[in-house]
Length: 436
Image 1 (cartoon, rainbow, N blue to C red):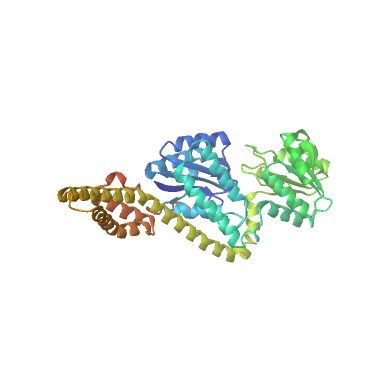
Image 2: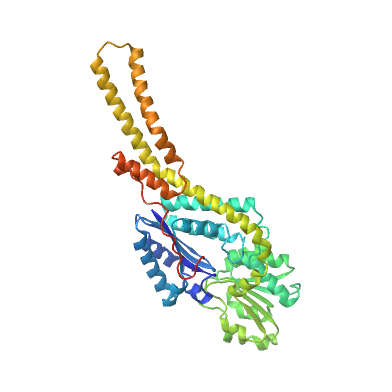
């Protein structure tokens, strides 16, 4: 099985392209079921900052073309211009870095690990993730935990939500006595609410299409839930609006926001959009009394704070390299085990046959102790002959080397049936956009 990552992110694609690939859950499931027909495996990481397919397949060239066609159909002809690809060990490195938050817009933020785990579990749930990707993800999650434990990268992180709150605080010189409207009641809204509280905001309102979810979040963070139907009445009173819904089309447009301007007396309104696709149409920012920001605007803001985490990121990168090497080495050993087992079985079978033939020729001229000595000698010869190849197969480093040795042993001893599959090694491909 070979590995592939293909996708795009905030590093390679503008928000307009990314939001075209932000699929609802039902369409994500359909995509996985098309691409992960046995023996192929796949899972899809889809966040506001990245859309990435991770796949394992014996014939990766064929699967790669199918994946590119799917992404092109979903994202439009120009989507291919922004795609990157990582194959073999490069794909493993990329996944481990993503899970460890070394490829995030906000370096070190904790949310991405949960998003990758959710994508993995979704793939498992629809039968698209089986043995190969299960082992890969377990290793990636273990690596992410090690990075969080052994470096300070997470302690210096600024989340998307906290960055949004910092921007709002700058616009108003603090949030005390400001009315903040949260539109949406998911994980991002909860995170934003907690940061708003820490920043001194006391007037928090939550509006969500499902009132019960708005009430649950409001109870948890000390806010007030309001019916979604009152959204534009609430907009009249709000100073800050934070959006994070799953709406496929913008909720706020230049027309409907502009319509409340007179009632607000054109008082300054800060609007930040943490959703992809966007909840706030880009044209809203053209209103001279509105400060509107989307996730790409926040990227520019958090980039200013990245220097403090650069040293920790270097340490984390070393850990990722170590964990990828460990996974590759362990996988090579796993691939070699069937060959080792058959090789030992073949040797022991030959030894038993020769012992029986020798003892039969000698007849009853040996004592039980002598017969056992002949049997022990035969086993010792087998063990000594197989010691070196066994040690070599168990201690291989790069995976392709393990496969090469196991395959050579299988061929030399007539064990072709036990030869391992093609491993993670393969040509490194990075197309149209480089590292993602």
